Image 1 (cartoon, rainbow, N blue to C red):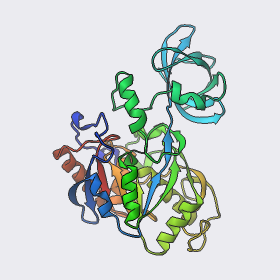
Image 2 (cartoon, rainbow, N blue to C red):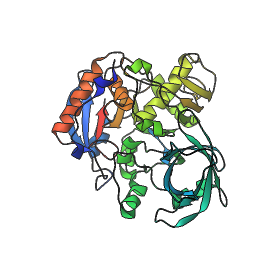
Image 3 (cartoon, rainbow, N blue to C red):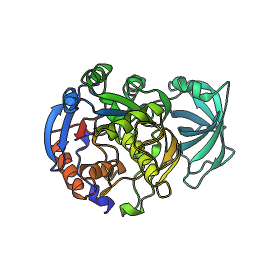
Image 4 (cartoon, rainbow, N blue to C red):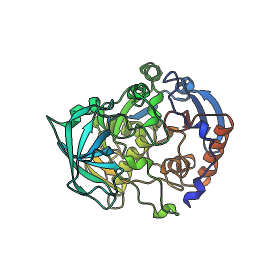
Length: 382
């Protein structure tokens, strides 16, 4: 398959620039497999599509205030830093903008969002082949503890913002209500719709809930460059599965109950570990968990899900199969994106019909004026 097979027309005004007035106020399209029939609902109808005994699995990563403003020393030129991953305390890989002409040894003065000078400086120590820069921060303590004060929400490039008022709105709304573990530079946006009240309604209906952690990287917004999907090199992201989640998911699978993933990130974690368990030698996953191959009881060390930490480069596209996830709740994704390809694979596991079904659903969403991307409306594939 080709990258251009996942193109679709989208009027710019349908790209949501702000969240819905209420977290749970979005619209919901439901795509029923295998035939791809479509229905229109509101997000508040979502609990009615879950069954007693289902497992709803979320991604509890927390978005860092990872966008930092700075000036070059001594010239005073403006520069922006986007934190990617910590090497150790005050030592980070970042993306610089503009960054082509910046060389190792360059120094920067960090600034508060309102333009005041922050008590932090930074020095560029190296650049890698991908153009990412390793930065050492200099200041009092750990800069991670200062990010809420000096950093800004790392909104995706298709959302425009002017002024601190809008940024304050994003500090709350570009974060799920169940976010716990800091580390993402982009939100797992399918989870942005959920409120504590909706989650309690779901639990009261006999649905088990659990979570994994996948720290979403900037690669999620990187455009695919390869023309053929088979040639694409997937970006790597860190994840963790706690023992309780492994027990809950394995028990559900053993009993024939459905696992519902909230978001493509949750889906990637579960399917990554399943592939590692089934064939560790070929899975695009580095995983530190209990041994591969095992029985099928409900413990965390057996079944197709294991507790542990790892890094995934799993790229799911038609005709991929799915070993764990039985239903997927997600948002509407960018044209030619790996996320759209994952959703297309899930619409018809093991086949190629899903691309056509999903693009038909997207065309219907455009016709019905759904809102797209991070702050947009939702799609449930059951």
